[in-house]
Structure formats: structure tokens, C-alpha cells
Length: 84
Image 1 (cartoon, one colour):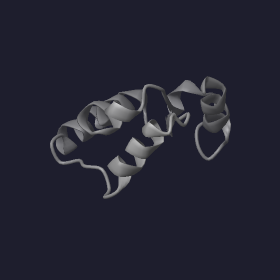
Image 2 (tube, one colour; image 1 turned 60 degrees about the vertical axis):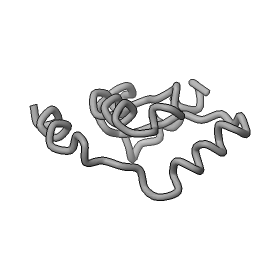
Image 3 (tube, helix red, strand yellow; image 1 turned 180 degrees about the horizontal axis):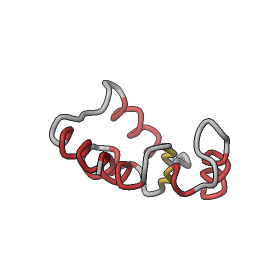
Image 4 (cartoon, one colour; image 1 turned 60 degrees about the horizontal axis):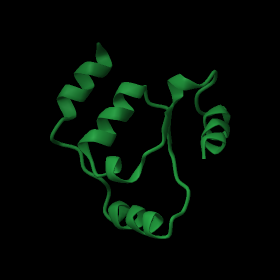
């Protein structure tokens, strides 16, 4: 419920840091492999992907709830590398 309230509170108020959009556009243009790995719950990750420009750039994503041990353990990064 806390995460649901969080998403409701920030909807319409989130934006990417300056330069992130241009950087990700370059990643796509250069056809570099990329995936987003976040320790946030999957519902939050999907929210951010759908409510910001991030969704245009990331077809692959993994959340901390999809691995045995979330950050700071390396599990999420190892799984992200396997998915690439």
C-alpha cells in the first residue's frame, strides 16, 4: 500500500535529470546493449518507465524483486548481464 501511495503522490511530478534523455538517445542510436536494473519494486519500475521518457529507451528491465538478493548484492547486475 505504501508503494501505491508513493506512486499516486509523485504522478505528474517526476522528470528525468537534465541530459539523461540525450544520453539515452545516443545509446539507442549507437545500438549499444542496455537494460535498466533497479532495486525498486517492479510496480514502481513499470510506473517510472510508463510516466517518463525512460519507457522509450528500455525494452529490458529488471527489479530487485526478481532476484534472490537485491542491492547492494550483485545479483541484479549479474541477472541484467545475462538478459543482455
